[in-house]
Amino acid sequence: MPLLETLTRDVVESVLMGVAVGDALGLPLEFEWREPLDAWLEGLGELECVAPRGYCAYSDDTEMTLIVAESLAERCGVDQEHLAEMLMAKARIEDELRYYGAGTIAVIKLLRKGFPWKKAVLEVYEGGNMGNGAAIRVAPVALFYHPDTQAVWRAAGEQAIVTHAHPIGVEAARIQALAIHYSLSGVEPVRLPGVLMGQAKTREFKTALGRVEGLLGSDPTPREVVDALGNGAPGHESVPAAIYAHARARGDPLKAVLNALSLGGDSDSIASMAAAIAVAYSRGLGGLEHLRDAVEGADEISRVASKLYGAIRECTRG
Image (cartoon, rainbow, N blue to C red; front, side):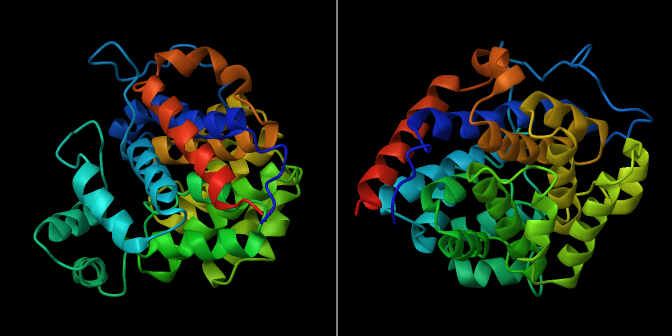
């Protein structure tokens, strides 16, 4: 698996930091579960982050992303047993700022009681969880397995089913991972939904991505976008919404986040996923750069990025 020269350490760190910045900006809005706006945000303006300790706190989106990144680095790829152990040990489900989804909390609690992950994930939801929890954390998988499209697809699904066994939850992770992967490869934002629609397996994602394409051909309001796609935690709502936010922004990270925040609903997840895609495409934080040092754990994110990049170089050599 050859390493693309464009996948530098700076790109890896920027994508992880983009997840955190989008997450932190969206977190206070998720507490409100705000309705979509009537017009698109043009700037950060009066938006404020949750800063109880002097920094912009992030949610479970970033925490799980860092856990996945460390597991990938330590095991040279997706190791489901190891990932389950890492989530059990490091996910701070008791911290109200992390705002973990109920299904993920339930799975992690069962893991801590000694349930094997394969049993825990189905104990919570018959058929598995169809939420976006596995998609919001998948960015490191896209980075690690890039540029191998099939490996990205496979590994995204493998890490997903540790907590999200429902086909929608799994496909949400796969589509989000491919969105980052193709953006790293330079696929233009307006073409991305069509490319992803060709990869989608479920009716729900084929339909939603087709709607994203249709919306890009008009000039809808945020409310009209939400009427078409949704803005909730189910994977087939929030992932297409993030892809639309990126495509409408033409790959500009700040505009992608502003678009995502305009949609309301699961704001932190949509904004973090949109930021990851846009940062991968632009290979930098762009207009979000000034927020790098304001985000919780910026040094830790940088450390994990270095660890992940070192593993990419070492594990994929030759």
